[in-house]
Image (cartoon, protein in one colour):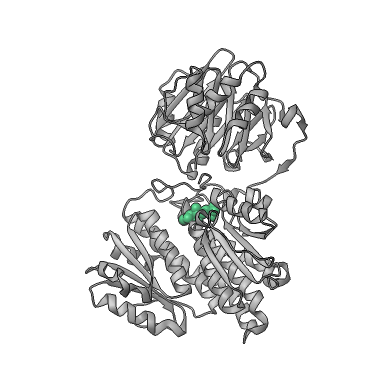
Length: 590
Ligand code: F6R
């Protein structure tokens, strides 16, 4: 969600900025822009739509010979996605790009209007630029500190100060920003994917620090102008993790990587379950996350409650953070996040910590805010996930919940060794399932012209339905709903029409016949049904079946099928699969 890149050095500034912006495209955006600077001028070029359109406009413009620059992809919050509202914004001597939301924008704007500032855009960012400019005396650092003292909200800022030709400035609060160190060049960016072509040395900017970048040096300045020694981290991204590696889309590449990343994530724990934290001392668990990560948590909830007997809730972070949560000393809060930067999930984590509650996180990005602040980080090994719709990271989150529940329940299970063997086999089984891609294309062919679809199941199967439905709707724009199969009759069934696709998920032997009865009910009202189940629970030869493994592992077999159906359907509908409209990869604002 919004992407920032900054560069100061001898390379072609425009090229570095555009390369960075292209790498950040996956975060989601609707307009983009760059500001180039040299000793004499600052040149701003902006456009709506994709980076390609910005690049075309840049190529048609006579550019200054720049020595530094800042760039931005904007996901509109204040004001529509047009050229005027696109970043960078320039007020007085300040030019800046911003990621985040300024909550007291109206109040600040009124004060600045009274001081004589005029505003050309509807954005909160222009207000920040004016605010900093209003405090600009001699010292930009003082002006920045004064400005951020006034701001309520979240921000990552990349700044050019007209009077300081040798430097760029960057700072952040509740929005990610990191610094990249090169040879006679330095960078900042929203995440490291923007910079991996140039450097493997990074500094993770902390809140309250201002970064001052020149060509040869990065200084971190704390309150009262104190110098802070930077902690430099070396991070190498493997070549195999970069680019699409021959796949048509990142989403497909990332689904196809699932067997490998599954093995990498679960193997250490299968060799030694003690590597997983011991959660048996907790009396209740709150799982908190957003979107797919929450649906992974929902599966965790069913498994933990059913097999370990610990009361467990799974809730959406944007709701959880504002409600009265009932904790006791034996409550554990588990956050789930691929990016580790989701604003609502971070806020829920901080709130729980403030209450003295132990927090644990299942997270992918090891350098993220959640990974750094949580009490107990537990990592999935998904590698970079670029497609906006999560696939491999979601599967691995589920895998870790399955292992956590298994560890908690192990001593009470009838045949734990057999379940352990299922875990060992699962990467291979997932590979075999993915190899049947043609079968899922066939299903996509049968549904892609529909505008509505349903997913039904009970208990854990319902949790799987939630993710199946989200995946299909977000990439194909088919309106989908997941429903507890037994709940359909209480209203929703009135929406079932002739030819409407309904996916029924059945993995639980005890609930097989119940869900099947609900599937028959929609079938008799004309629905086109698809049953996804195990060999053992198969209801007819038409079913899509997966090998029968334990309740802890079977979900890991069903999910890739739903992901591929969503992918193939979106492809047939000609959708922008890796960057669905209106979506952002990392939702860094509320
Ligand atoms: C859907 C999807 C989102 C994310 C959600 C949380 O495909 O990707 O629903 O799961 O925005 O993001 P993270 O996991 O980064 O906290």
